[in-house]
Length: 363
Ligand code: F6P
Image (cartoon, rainbow, N blue to C red; front, side, top):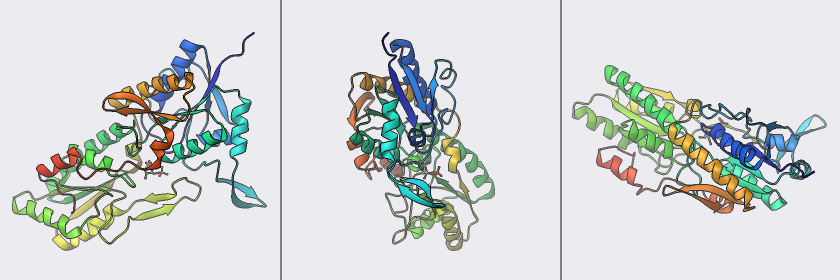
């Protein structure tokens, strides 16, 4: 009797809307068209190290297209090459990647579909060198992975920011206040730029452009002079003042990217209020941006990514990441995707369009 074909799948790093749509796309096709068994590792690389997995049936992946989060669970602090273990009651960090490799091998998988952002895919690249047969699917609300125009999760986050902006706009107008909305984006300002433009922000602050508080206040005053007695500022959590640094909230040692930011909106509210003598309030959207149902765009992108990733796996074209470039599905070497973060180019068409309607960038 011939052995059943098997593939593995895992989701690593911060969750985002669309992960379940991608899991569904990979699994349904593998099960229905190729009679494969799909092994879902739990909590990302943590499940691979701890040998925690479950078989996904067609029923398990039915009805999850619109569901946020990931049915497999995830972790953004499970690096097999720097893994926290207890030795004599003390937490130390060890390389347990060989254990992960053994667990992978033992299951007799034809390949491992890895869904992740920058941190997860950097680890995938290292595991590839150990011999794991990996194909990758890009996900992150931050949209900062190179090689792909869009990652799924981003469009959903942008629509959440836009809705929040619309709501904050009406209260800003009523109270004649300066409202500051802090959004995610550690090193790249994609969410702030897209959400800010869609939400009609007067000022957008991104990590790519260190800001000048005087310039921000200048814009607020300019609006006052024009009879617009309220202002909306969107700030990426990673934005920082000229000659300053991003506001670090905490460090998470075991995470591939240990920095956790937060607090720039509070900083700005205080500065702007002092300088302009206008009342300021701030809102931190935080994990709201990562939760809930994916938009139609993200469902479509995730479904196509899932389909394309299985193609790569069947062709044994490992070490590649599926990508969306100029409206088409492509594949790029994983190495290229993780080498450098995709930041917002300062001549990005959306930035030029925003400037042309009077949006300021604090520069
Ligand atoms: O990378 C995705 C992301 O949501 C970033 O935008 C944010 O800085 C970070 O993850 C937050 O991580 P955590 O879920 O550990 O708070």
